[in-house]
Image (cartoon, rainbow, N blue to C red):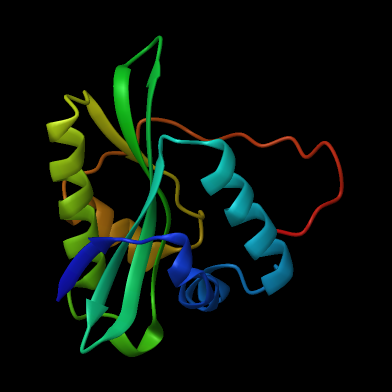
Amino acid sequence: MNLQLLSISAMPEIIQLLCFLNPAVCEETMLRRYEKILREFPNYRILGAYVDGRLAGLTGVWHGAKIWCGDYMEIDNLVVHPDFRNRGVATALIQKVEIMAREKNCNILVLDSYTNNHPSHRLYHRLGCEIWGFHFVKPLVNFEH
């Protein structure tokens, strides 16, 4: 498995993979959102995992700081292609992000998970993540999600 930071040139592969995580969001909308993130937010990276030359998984990586915790790193939109699930791809991505977080002297590593995604919850617990709270959302407009 080869882990590497991805560039905008990998966008077609990235969007195809994200469709597995967000099937209700059309590719055009995902592309527009991702291009905006990459253009306007310099503390965002995309980490990819290649297996046999194919993009098997990816995660977005945010680095930031908050009053309550100081420096943190956030795993965002972690997804593994169905053909590569249960082969250690997600574990490798998370472990690499943890290394990146330690290199940036982050105090915590955080992520959100859909409440019904029980397989991911088991993985996160196994890798030492704890549930510390809830992520509340108040939609302000009707949007694709």
